Length: 103
Image (cartoon, rainbow, N blue to C red):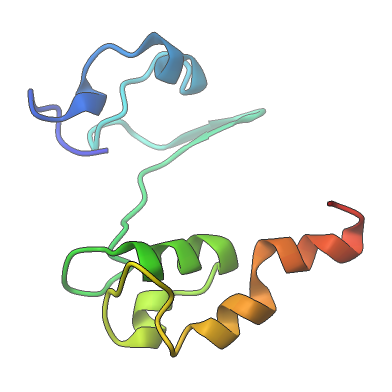
């Protein structure tokens, strides 16, 4: 998401994406909402850390729910930072769901 600017591809008309958000465009000016089976809210990929988000800490954050850039002390990529590897190994969503019978 971002501003409704010509360089922002999400500001364009994307019927498939807009169906997911009950007809709303995917910009930072769209107000958050929730309905049964729909939640729409902006996310800050920086996670409160200065600098450009990177895939190593970003994916670790997505897979674990932990603020990986804060753990690493900065944004880091393209691989998991050495300070986040133990968190990723122990708390990743796949490991947490396996005991519940998901495969």
